[in-house]
Image (cartoon, rainbow, N blue to C red; front, side):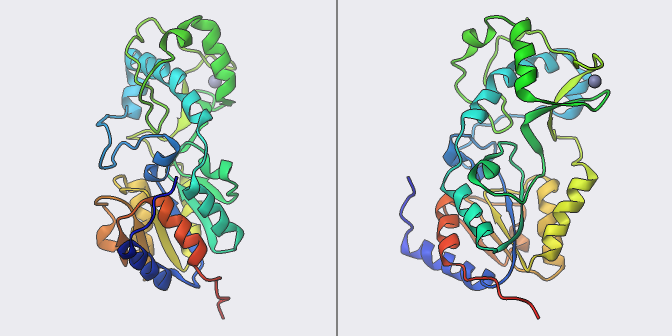
Amino acid sequence: MLAVLAPEERARLDDAVAVLGGLPLAVLTGAGLSTDSGIPDYRGPQSVKRNPMTYQQFVGDESLRRRYWARNHVGWRHLRRADPNAGHAAVARMEERGLLTGLITQNVDKLHSSAGSSNVIDLHGTFDRVICLQCASVFPRSRVAEILEELNPGYLERESDAGDVAPDADADVDDTGDFSMAPCPVCGGMLKPDFVYFGENVPKDRVAAAYALVDTAGALLVAGSSLTVMSGLRFVRGAFKQGKPVVIINRGWTRGDEFATLKIEVGVSEALTYLAERLPDVQPSR
Ligand SMILES: [Zn+2]
């Protein structure tokens, strides 16, 4: 259910329409957009503090890696079951109306694609793929799930009541010591969910593709990200340096606020729904 926007919130969003209207937009989204789909945010105002594992911990410490896979084994199903919300649908409508140069998301939940967006850059990867760190083979998460289920009979049934699942599919499970990890079916190497960990770089070609969306846009709209990590913040800086308007919709402070033409603290789904209705068509440039 969408909340009703207060008059002052509508006035702020009308300011955003004035700033963005007629310009082709690049959109950057983060975890704040998926909270309405039941996926909690690490960093939102009401978020549970949780320290995501770093890449170095994952590859360097077998017991941490075991714990990670056990929690992911329970948690990824939660992401697979999640449905896109009104905010995702609004972004898809903006694309359909020809308002966007494209969409960059920091979320690994694939809810933009589920909502019908087609030009999506999954900046931090997606939860439904697994990569081998040795031979670089990529596997569907569902295939790895089958292997893990065979290796760990009864585990899911035992731990299925895991309460909280983080946006990177990390379920709140403690009993992970006897969990058996799956080796790469091709080479026996170490498998890792194919998303970007803290302490890991976004692949260069993906960054370049995302910059291209910002370069061809007339303005940047950020929704539901606190821009805490450089992987997203750099696009805000990039747009700012090019003299393009930046509008940030997020509850709470963001690291990009100083670069924003307009910062609006309002519910993300409500704001995007409003903007998708009110933004005028893009004016052809001459
Ligand atoms: Zn391999």
